[in-house]
Image (tube, rainbow, N blue to C red):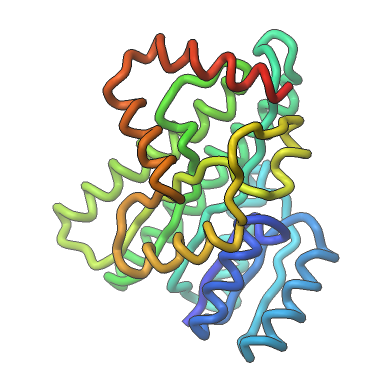
Length: 255
């Protein structure tokens, strides 16, 4: 059994790779940080006696995403689990934030996830088995002033996943596609996105443990705590304008 995890060099991705390795899956770990991947490879092989393969690749490039898929197909033929975890963010007024960085966010959070999900899902559908987990965020359920691009990108991930879930259901497919929607998590994301969370943060290991267990149990959407589930309920029943108003002041404290 073989799993592929993107964004595996730190945070949720790293801990998801650990959780999957605990279940005796061999793992392909993907990121740009070679040193971090090598350290994770040595740890997983030592602790769990599995095979770990490293792919050092920048998923902000469309061609690199297709290259990754082709390399995996050529080397391993098929995978059993895909975890689309790689993601970027930024914080600030839309008129002030870097266009280049926002393009990287869109390319990683949306385009790379879309390409890898589509290509690997086509293979899984032919075999009628497999698991895909897309990592989104509670942010995807509401407008996000001062983190507009990030929030919008996670909304795409959620809606894409939900739509494909329904397609698979009507096809009576055994492939399971899920979406993880965490709240604030203790990861390197804060540094990369130039934000500081003011609400309680969950340990990435706790998030990963719950996410992997729910994925293998067929859960369609996973929240990381009752508090985050409650936020989703509020986002469904309250007007978008009110949620945007609240989000603005929450994000303003992060800058």
